[in-house]
Amino acid sequence: MNTAANSRFTSLEASTQEDWDNIKQQFLHFSESLPDRIMDHLKLLDGDFGGFPIDRYQHCLQTATRALRDGRDEEYVICALLHDIGDTLGSFNHPDIAAAILQPFVSEENHWMVKHHGIFQGHYFFEYLGMDKNMRDQFLQHPCYERTKEFCALYDNPAFDPEYDTLPMSEFEPMLRRVFAKPRTSVYKAAMD
Image 1 (cartoon, helix red, strand yellow):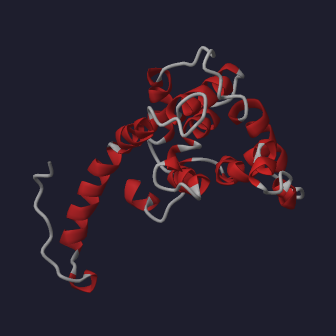
Image 2 (cartoon, rainbow, N blue to C red):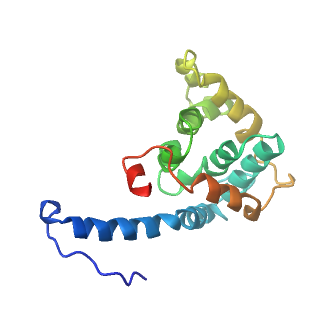
């Protein structure tokens, strides 16, 4: 519960420096709990199988586990963990949702990988939906093509194994907190400095 005083302006043009000092302080406090909100939202995927062999939450954990065990850096592992977090609100564009959440905190290469992983993952099943399994080839000349292709091949595609020894969220929480500690880019980055 927020106990701080709220500003009283009725339009932004009527706001004052004092108002924005207050808003900035509350924003900074609110942003500190972003990792908690992300983990809470990710847990909404728990128990949602959608016809798959494992639920979407386990799929995210398993994708991250595979990336971690393969020696990927923390940022990449967190991208693997959150790549499908958008499934709850963006059923038709979940990669865009995940990419938007990650964008201020990750490299351009990792952002692009998450944003486009759905089309690349489609290589393994689009034909069964009457779609072009080679849709990813429209990006053949993009510098992140191979990175995204590899992400799907090594981590996302095989992460549906009910017998796999998947690590729990507690293994990833410290990494998630570090990656989301401070944005790399954002129109609000200056407010964090």
